[in-house]
Length: 397
Image (cartoon, rainbow, N blue to C red; front, side):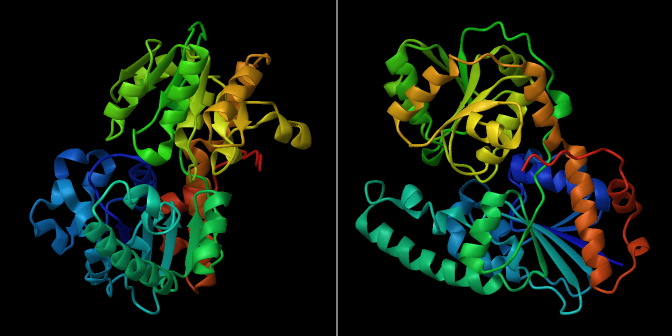
């Protein structure tokens, strides 16, 4: 059999690329189709694939400003010829799930999110205060067409896997398709129990509007808390101007540096609504509790007191229900009244380890391949090995 991988674009290693790398451990080197590839930003197992790019690769300035070619994304993903392939495995947060495959092939698509910038977060990306009237008019027309294409192309995958129950609901809402939840892999093995001797709170995030880092900065200002913000992005200058003397901004860090910061923080602040949220799980892997906005994927990983009481689980964090500084301030004050069991917090995080993802993803592919009329032994051996892994999953959801 022939397997094809499909991914939106390869311009850096973020959460989506970590999922692709984990899937690559199962498939081994194969053909990988992507809109755009920047080789010096991609390494390791992903770089071992035979990578095919779309016509976007040759357009001017596409490596840095590819998002400006958004209206061409559907045509670009449809330009790939996947007729030789029996099994298509896509990972998508934009258009990869809309690839055209052979009618008798099996296409399984792992969805990080339906396109946020044309659905829920359209105004956050293209709000009237950010761009000219003419630009917003053009973007509004383009977004409408992209929404239409997004819904139509949702029929092309045979089976959907969602990275959280939050995303599963959005898939049903926008596309009217069912999806099976398979949580993404988190490298919990890289994060160890910390000493928790620090006096600071921590934010680890790209600095973009929908992450709502402004809430963390505002709360730290109000309470005069020491806050360390890890990450970069277009919001950095604005946030630094807001920040008081107790707030420090540093750039992106590797896992080893993050392990030290996580492990000595009083708590991680996670103020945005995310589809899943890998950062809270990394923090919990060091035993650090999380103060998170009470919507989105974080409420599937962080065990707040209300859920802990209902499901008999250890408390791993505090939720705040309103996207406001006052609500976050109240949550921080509530956090200060708790005593935290760092080992129990880490146990919850281990439920999202990469080994659990490999087992669930492999099992999903095998079962769908058999229902499709195939034989399990057709698949690469690593699928069978991962599916038979004896590690026990404690489903806390």
